[in-house]
Image (cartoon, rainbow, N blue to C red; front, top):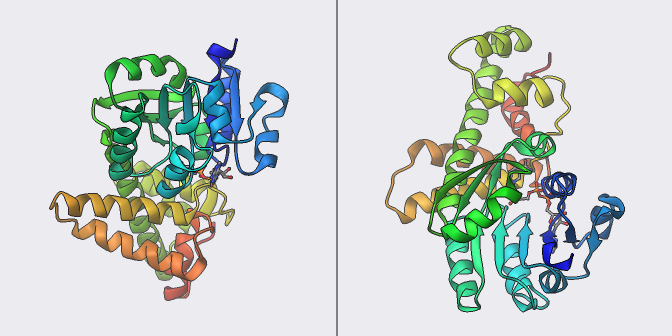
Length: 296
Ligand code: NAD
């Protein structure tokens, strides 16, 4: 029934598997993406809409998984945006857009009778496929409770607070730590390789010891040691998240010495290899500086 339709906009690396899991859980979706080919990957299991406004004229609840804050802003308030849809009641942002954007979108949508919820996710493409994402939900409780059963189809839902932006700050904290762990692990492994240690053995040791983190457990074994570099998280998106994290810290007058250094390293890698390279390719910069390759 049309009343039960869920809107979904942005079926990229994360959105596609999340949408597929919603369909697998029995939800009916109406989907839009600027790349028509991306929507077609969902086959004939979903309805296709030509614009965000069309999605929001068919569905009361509209989820988005879009790359950047300014794109989310455009998709919500631009010409043929969600805000101009006839049916929209609840807007759920699965993207990482930062608290400032979440707060301003929530305030503007509230004036139009729409509740905005933050629901950024962590767990990568692998977690999205397995429906094991950590979903960081925030916003008015009644609306949050309404979407929780649906979001359970993509992962584990944590209600982190009633204010817009709380879910976003939680997500920035997560990615600050994840980006820091990856940068520090890359530096350490490059040093070990330069001394003559075997990278595979180093990763095995770290995973049995206290140096263990998400880079040693997943990124190095799955994408770096085998030189696959297909984690599915663009390096430019990690830079965006680190910038948003530092900007948030600054707005709160919280010093962030380590975070700032980590951001600079990622920025440098973005300048060298471009924003579209996979985030697991960060190590290539460190390898080049030291004249080694981490392979195993
Ligand atoms: P992506 O670039 O793979 O997907 C974004 C999708 O949005 C694409 O299909 C693109 O065509 C579509 N799109 C862009 N502009 C649009 C518009 N104006 N209207 C409709 N569709 C539009 O990005 P992703 O990796 O799936 O990430 C999406 C969000 O999730 C980002 O905010 C990212 O930071 C966050 N995130 C990503 C990962 C990951 O591992 N990839 C993990 C957690 C969170």
